[in-house]
Length: 237
Image (cartoon, rainbow, N blue to C red; front, side, top):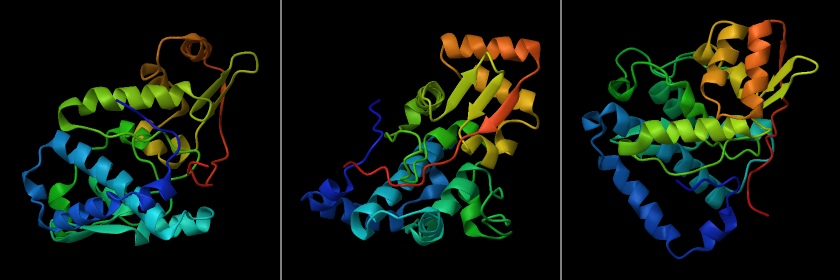
């Protein structure tokens, strides 16, 4: 499982195989998504989400800041199985079981929307560490497979929490500093500070940071703060 923190969008756009990839994406209009299993749905839509972002950046250039990146969630879309799917539709409609999100107060799919048949029945919070919108504070990007999706999501989550952009634990000052992802999607991780930090502890790799977090959980007196999110492009320079 190879993960990459930056993407060479300009190199992709110049590659002779890029046109072949574009032609393949057009064929997805005929995909029969209703036949996919849960694992196939997760792997397919995570990969498609990341593919749309790469495709957009290679063709249109990287969004400058939060406002232009916000438009990306609505404007960057593929036709899949005869229906249009934006990045927001994929993340919140399919992978988050048709849930509202921090930047849009409505559910992506209304009752009777044919895309609902593809939506997962519940949210696996680990998907947040596999989806890459092209910002520098995003997790590393890699390709997922249906047969290994559970293990791969574990690896992606652990890697993100291990990095300083995901989680920092200050045992002296009793402060846990987290990626803003945990604030934006707090309902996916737990209803309280303790549930959130317990979820993080359970998905961390064994090491000093995990031990520090365990000590704070045992004491019960610690503060949770959130980092500023770096929306600049993760393009390779």
